Every structure is written in C-alpha cells, then in structure tokens.
Amino acid sequence: MQNDMSRRLTAEFIGTFWLVFGGVGSAVFAATFPQYGIGFLGVSFAFGLTVLTMAYAVGHISGGHFNPAVTLGLWTAGRCANRHVIPYVIVQVAGAIVAAGALYVIASGRADWTVQSFASNGYGALSPGHYSMAACFLAELILTFIFLMIITGTTSKGAAVGFAGIPIGLALTLIHLISIPITNTSVNPARSTAPALFAGGEYLGQLWLFWAAPILGAMIAGVLARVLYEPTE
Image (cartoon, rainbow, N blue to C red; front, side, top):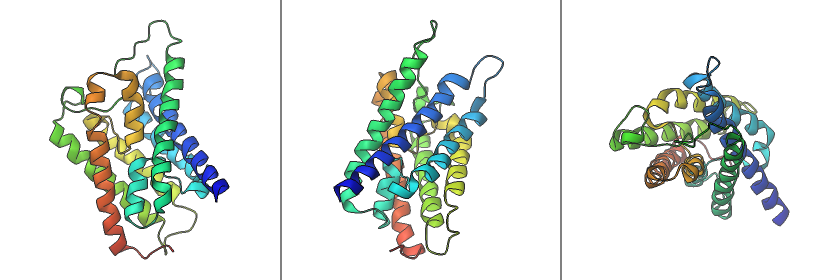
C-alpha cells in the first residue's frame, strides 16, 4: 500500500513538474523571443503537449491528474479515492513550485532578465487583455468544467481504450488558445501558485481566483459526470 502511494505521488510530482516547466517555460523563454518567438499559439501547444506526453509516461501509475482541480473534480465524480486527494494536491503544488524554481534559476542566467509576471495569472490590470474579475472567474470556471467533462468522458466505460491522453492534451491546447488573452490561462491551481510565488505582489493577491474558479468548475463537472457516465469501477 505504502509503495503504491509512493509511486502515485512520484508520478504526480513529475507530471506536474513537466507541465509547469514545459508550459510556463515556453512562455518565459520562447513566447516573445526576438524573431523566433512562438507566441500564444506555441505556448498553447506547449501546455497541451506536456499533459499529452505525461499522460502516457506516468498516467497509468497515478491517473495523470497533475492538477488539484482535476483531482477534486475526479473525487467528486467518484473516480479518485479519498486517501489520494490531499497527498495528490500537496505533491502537485510541490512539483509546480520546484519547476518554477528551476525556471527562475535558468532565466536568471540572462543578464538583462527581469521577473515581471513570470507567466502568472491575473485579472483586471493583471489580465493580458484587462478583463474584469467577474469575466476571468467565469472563463476559468467554464473552461475547467469543460476540461473535466472531457477527462471524465474519455476515461469512461465505452470510450476508446488507450487514447484518452490525445483529446485531453488537445483540450488543454484549445483552452489556452481561448483564454491566454483573458487570464493567461490557469484551469490549474498548482500551475497558478508556482509562478505567482516568484512574481509576488498583486499576483499573489489575486491567486485566490485561480484556486476557487477552477475547483468550482471541476467539481460541478464531477457531479454531472456521476449522472452522465457509467461508473468505471
């Protein structure tokens, strides 16, 4: 039992580390790089690819959550055991913070680099498109709701076996294409927490929204999944 939990937590740590290192890293290093910047489109694909690759690398060990909102949504849907919830959330946040720390050290190797937003999420003046708090909350809630519906649907009985990682990764890509201008895209409290710790100030003050909205959206999806899909166990 203990060995199984250790394997699960290690998988969640590595998966979340890669999501933040790859996704946030693409925004910090490559999004606006002179002449060769990958832009919003590239960052969107980077986040989707992190989930897609880790879904197949370690998803069979832990379920491939890499996101506290996903864990709580799946718990609400009856797809995550009670004993896994808190440990999963802790290691997800830890993996995200370690990834952001590594990014910070690497980025600091450039003489003229400044922290600025460090790819953090925000609303109002901190929103890339200066969207209101209410608009950002609604966007994060809806997008996380849809993300969890895709996750629960593609992993339900009757869905194509072995292919769930593809639509889940593509869904996260689409979510970023929609919402980078709105909130810089969270749908993941761990992803939001890690860069905010380094950006500090107002980004930390606004972090509450990027826990509350994704978790609420995910748990609403979890309730609906209990009705819509057949149980997996």
